[in-house]
Amino acid sequence: MSPREIAHALATAMVELHEDDPALHRVLTDEVPVPPALRDRFDALEPEMVEALAALLRAHPTMHHLRPRVAARLIAGLLESATHRWAVAEGGEPLARDRLVEELAAMGRGAG
Image (tube, rainbow, N blue to C red; front, side, top):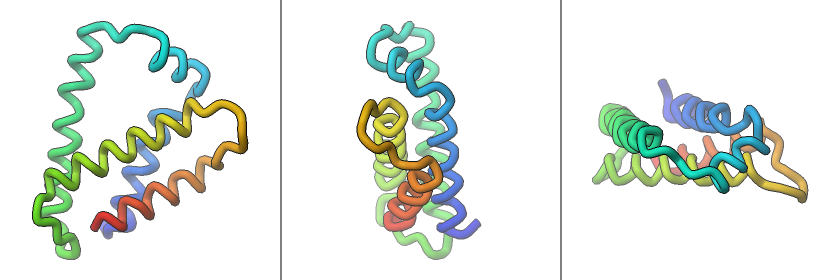
């Protein structure tokens, strides 16, 4: 995959994780305590995702990161935070889903 395709796939996946029910997502993340078992699953999944992204950064011929794992952690955190804010935003003019994916993908490509 090209860096453009990788960035688009990552951005799309993150938006899909957050877009189903914004009101429920807001309540679950902001008001409901996370059970320890679920927190453990999230905590176990994040390093796997970061390691997979770092492997992509290491293997791709056009990516030139001195520290791919650090770049992968930053990219994953950026995608999670920006997408979460988009999903739970109230009021104002929300960004269209496709535009959000394109903006996140462009930021991800800029990290390459």
